[in-house]
Image (tube, rainbow, N blue to C red; front, top):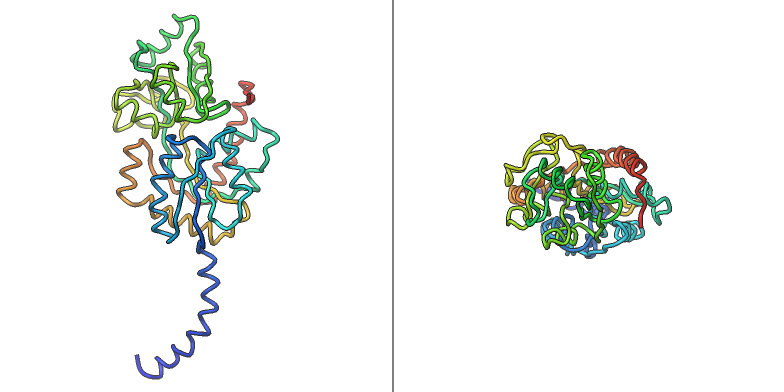
Length: 325
């Protein structure tokens, strides 16, 4: 660089810096970022949040903490984000199927999903895994039907709460199979899993991310898995399609949302950082171990999926006359 060029650069720098600063500030985070998980610790969303938090901390240069706000079918945590400051520092990480179901269950929600929450990115898709308690004398899907029909009380099926996708999937499967069952709601997927592992409930259909470890370690027995392929860790467990079950595409769609008025530059920054994190081989490997795969689809694809799923799940809620307790 010659002297004239150096002088020009020196003179231009102060003039350019005021222009650059707002753009940089528009994508920055000036205090601790919270990831709100509207479920109890130990569930799929909680596992993912604690996997992503340290990675996001390094990416944005701010501390990222996980905060569990369980209850009311995810509405407590979602409402906290809907009413947070629109500065990108309060994130909602949850099974967004819940957000597609709840408007049909709760016509007077304290927030509007489309207006008060803004999609950032899908995070992962994990199929649903149907599993039974170890003591149940059932080895496969056919045996499940035989057992249920030979026992007057049918099956006690744990779910993550009335109106949760675990509930809707269980109702649809049992209705299709023509067997009786009692749906037992818990405050989230984690306590529902513990109920089956302890023998308190007979069966669960839940996200493979959280359910697979119980099957691998022998606390439960896998019966069938949704999605278009078997789980690598459970190659002997057939798919819903293979055994003729409905809801073959059911699964955990984990996504991140922020307050609805959050500026687009902040949303884009969060999407970019999360997309880059999910592309890391070690993260992809960890997700695979948990039975999921990265799906870092951006705001527009996420918004379209949410609108379509809201209509689909609304039909199921009305068909089975499901009402919150």
